[in-house]
Image 1 (cartoon, rainbow, N blue to C red):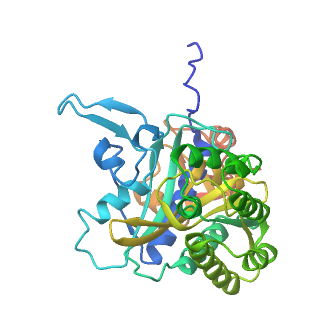
Image 2 (cartoon, rainbow, N blue to C red):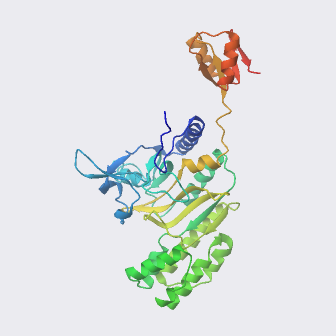
Image 3 (cartoon, helix red, strand yellow):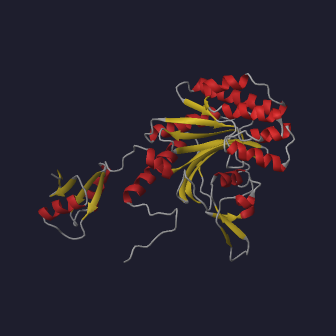
Length: 376
């Protein structure tokens, strides 16, 4: 058979990789369940109207579309499970007690890839807290992330905090037109303030200060506190400082960074957003505050593909034993209860053949006359 090419951004997960992906997803869900987060499983496809109900720029959503042959309505394949959790929380689980804690693991599909995530089919894991009033639960979420990374044996990481609605506040304070706002966003995206002076000298000075406030929280929070901002922007800055100071106090040993004018790609975060990176600058988790109608929410999610590359979890240290075809079910169960993965022959073999097959299948042990022996 000739090699069959897969589309760009798609791949087969072979046994070793698929095994590690499963271990990571399972470890995450087990941890979330122990912390009171209940598992949900939304559908892969939905009508566009329900899939994108939290976002405004529907035409720019990174999603595959198709026509439902039954209803003749356009459907989207989910590019993000967070949106579906929000829909379920204010729909089927509307009457459930708040705060509502939910977790999930599932495939998502993106129409485009990027430099950070080359794959277009990705397993997303995450947790959300719905209905948190004015207590935004940032500490709980950061705690869960730290606990998860420890579980996955990812030791070195840092968190970068951003203000997703800061640009909106600046726009209100300086009464920016749509063209001016688009221009300013493009400048912020490129970390550049040149040209903003044409709109407003004061906006350029503030933009320069905010663009300079990128880096370690300890240093840059102090610099932000010295600057006097316009009304709406000041409210946003004060709230950010309050939350980040609280997190820094709770987690003094964490490496915390900030980037006030980072452009938020989700289009639904409010207040505080963050990204967790490994020491190799691999994005591990993203999250933040958002609203579902009148309810305040917070959550985080990550791509298993990225976690696999950084996690030191091992799946090749499992005890595998090769056994003959005539092994009884009761004896097989006893081996499994002792932690063995049982690889069974498909026909009756002699001892030397059992040893040979044990080596072929990379088994540390083999069974001979009900004796567990180690492969030399």
